[in-house]
Length: 115
Image (cartoon, rainbow, N blue to C red; front, side, top):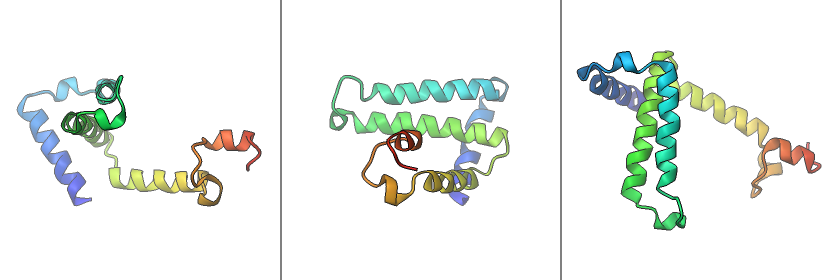
């Protein structure tokens, strides 16, 4: 939790030193998340995963995380609590005994005869 708060403060400091808060509306941060995720995907385009430039992958992943931190800050979300809640929801939706080693979505498993 302290690490997330420290990173959020650093992202806010960077943003505020440049007077960019006015450009960081929730709509624009959400759009930027998608754009940064697209740039992350671009690292892997037309190549095997192991061929991706790991340094560039890290840079693009950092852009995704910084944008997510700023969006979470805007809504005053406790990001650690949100992630823990989502992991618990996913654990209930994807029980180990039914999904271990399977790449199905929960509704695909239901259609395939699972419950």
